[in-house]
Amino acid sequence: MNSNLAEAHLQTIRLLMERSAIYRRALAPILLLAGLLGLAAAGIGLGFHLESARSFAGLWLGTAGVVVTSAFLLVRRQALNAHEKFWSPPTRRVAQALLPPLASGMLLGGLPVVVPPAWSDNSLTALVWLLFYGCALHSAGFFMERGIKWLGWIFIIVAFSLMIILAANGRLLRPPAANWIMGLTFGGLHLASGVYLYFTERRHPVA
Image (cartoon, rainbow, N blue to C red; front, top):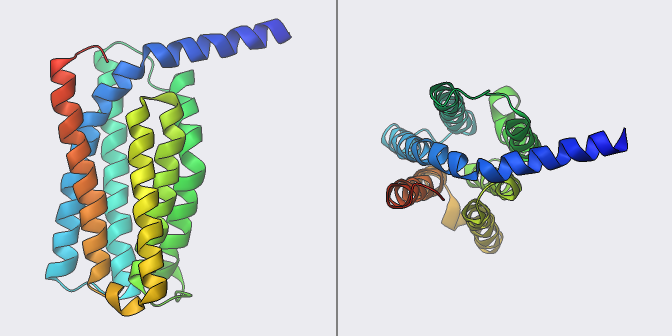
């Protein structure tokens, strides 16, 4: 029984190593899409002055929902085109690594949509999302290339740095700063990472 379990684990690890290049190819369009949608959402938030706790959370949770749904469809299409099983053991491992921090961030950041927020500053909501999202990317990075871990660390470091600024002088991060934070991080960082992966993948098809 133990030998069979060990063999199953080895097979999963082998598949993860073999599919690291596939994950890399899948990430480029996903990051590009997330970046463009993030910039668009920031533009909507700034243009329409969506600065109340409920409207800000609703805007960015809606954007996250579109990104997650689109990512699911993109990965599924790539799997079908490659004649591979979509919900494979490696895919489940990556999903299990992503789920706890993503769910925690969505739950805490989404509270203003359902109940009166415990805090009135949208910047704090944005920083909670940044922190948990960075943790999710770092966890997924154990099954992908180390660049995903670095991207996760960037989100975490930005979140902690802005938290220090918020603690020192909260007036510096008042609305519309929250939409700027989300646009520059979820929009700008995703877009930059997607462009990098797209061009390096074209030059080096096998990662």
